Length: 429
Image 1 (cartoon, helix red, strand yellow):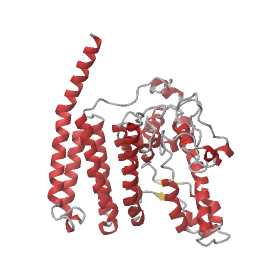
Image 2 (cartoon, one colour):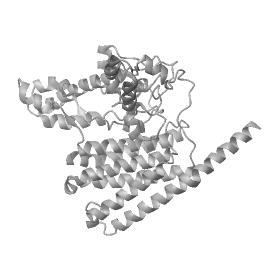
Image 3 (cartoon, rainbow, N blue to C red):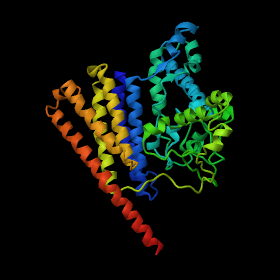
């Protein structure tokens, strides 16, 4: 937990700089693939994911350590070979977990956030799940357990294998020659994120593309089929917490509405997107039929709201950096209180990005929560040892953030709407 937090203190700024560099590079080349609000949504999703992971808010029914202790027929030493074997086994397991996520209704909920962006860029790589509380796939690491690959080797290799999936989320790198036959490249992964009929549910490998070629899920990027990104039932929100549970909530409602007991039970394990016939007929959902003609989610916002959203992200990054760097000193249960505050923070400002008036209530709750933390603990989780005015600064920030949110909801939203009506009227003259 602490070690992972320390790693993230280095990884987070690196990822942010690469995301911003891609934005600049696309602008410089006249091919900007990063929409501002979409990027902020992706960053906020990444923040919620790493916060959940650092806090360890998930359990394994059967852990890798449990398998090693019971079925190992040999105990390999932590040499270079142990790390190579671990990497290959984790990548093999990753392919099958990924394939299951795409094919079964209930498991799609844990992966939908990663595909929810209607763009394809480095930022969308940060859209990772917070909805997984039970980890069920340790059995896929049985080959490593049989060889007795040490638990600490798996613990080191797993985040490396995950971080290695970041770079290929870009449209700026074209095909890469011989590497296309060995590893997952940007071209392969563009196919994976596309909703074109030719591409959907293809290229499920994470590092080595060989798994797709072995198991029949490979598809080359075609020169005459431009990938279109997103999901066929668009999420229509910038709020990553809503996105994470949107599909699950649909399954719960559909199961409740279904007349047949059989449908109530099987909906969870049917192919992704399946709905009972009676429910689908009575409660139809919008689905993209023509991938080349649909309107991307992009509510009209002012430049001031865009700027404010960036400021919110910067403050949040500073706050979670303190959490990750001091998690042992903060301890339990205070670290979970901190994590809850982070989630409320993200919910509040992304709802404002959605131009949802309820953002004002969430911002009020966030401000009360933040001030309450300072009142209860007497400081911001020990930060006053290094910044003696931190309590005052944060209280001023909470009050100011609430007032600014109120201004956006009560004035800016109306002004933007009026400007849109005025522009539309002039265009129709």
